[in-house]
Each structure stands twice: as structure tokens, then as C-alpha cells.
Image (cartoon, rainbow, N blue to C red):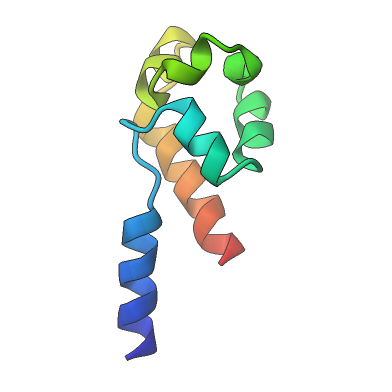
Length: 79
């Protein structure tokens, strides 16, 4: 039963490419380092905070699905 509850909680907390950087960093501040390692230093820019993860990835020539997958993997490892 615990595994079902854990899975539901993870799905509820899952990062999506539709999230803004502001939403992401408020909930998961540790994601900033991962994004910067991938070349997205703009996460500290006030204007970027209103962008979605997908918009930021596209602007930097990155695959949003891959970045979101990586963020979720790190989130799952943290739990």
C-alpha cells in the first residue's frame, strides 16, 4: 500500500515542462544547480522566472523532455 501512496505523491509533485522556472525553484531550489550545469544560467534572471521550462530549454537549444526527465529523476532519487 505504501508504494501506491508514494507513487501518487510523486505524480502529484512531478515536474512538467509547463511549469514556470519560478514554480520549479520555489518548490525545488536545488534544481537551479542542475539547470546551470546544463547551460541554463538564466534561471537567476527575473524575466526567466515567468518562462516555462519548455520555453527556457528551447531558447537554449535543449530538449525540454530530456531536461524534465533529468529533473524528475533527481527528484525521485531525493525522496
